[in-house]
Length: 248
Ligand code: HEC
Image (cartoon, rainbow, N blue to C red):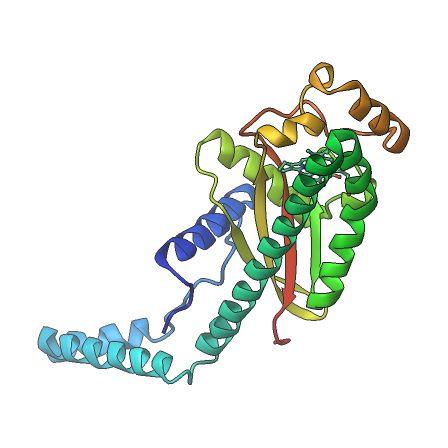
């Protein structure tokens, strides 16, 4: 039974929970409890250590078989998380690639000033289209936004702030996911940090380094733009995807 695609996914997921819970001052996951622990100890005191070993082996075998056949509801829930994680990855990668290739195509065709016009007209459209086609929430968010439509919600903001801390500590991973509960049930929340590369600085770099054409489009279309001053390697924002899991 694979809960995550690889060990690194699992580690990433747990690192996220661990960081979140440390920031929150509470556990991010449900602790496993063993209500049988006390009677079991009393029993084995009477029957010695050999019995204890046998019982432990049987219990472990039972847990293993239960998980393999999916008869534990916990195991079933995790399987659906795996499917959700796979879809979230696909959506985030697709959306990122789509916007990046649109940028590159426009820069080649008409230079930066044309690219920024097209980007400002099409980035939202593309994101909405992507989200509607996939049937799931998909958005680009940032702590320093250019378009107010990309404002993060409270949970996304908290996670972006965590990414900034992890980046400072050189511990930022390529993707994060956790399960969030709301009134409609549970959803998998996937976030993929977007890191600034050289190309991004033409429109998101230091103000004085941005070309006059780009500056004038920015002034005209985004009078409250906060998305400048970034350097290569900074976190520019993230792609955020939410996939509903079957309600509990
Ligand atoms: C040609 C100019 C241009 C380039 C190059 C560019 N961007 Fe942008 N970026 C924009 C514009 C314009 C917007 C606002 C689009 C909108 O309306 O959503 C934007 C918005 C964003 C947003 C959404 C959050 C916000 O601030 O509104 C993210 C995230 C982002 N860009 C990341 C990047 C990354 C990463 C790169 C480099 C791979 C990059 N951009 C390169 C022009 C550019």
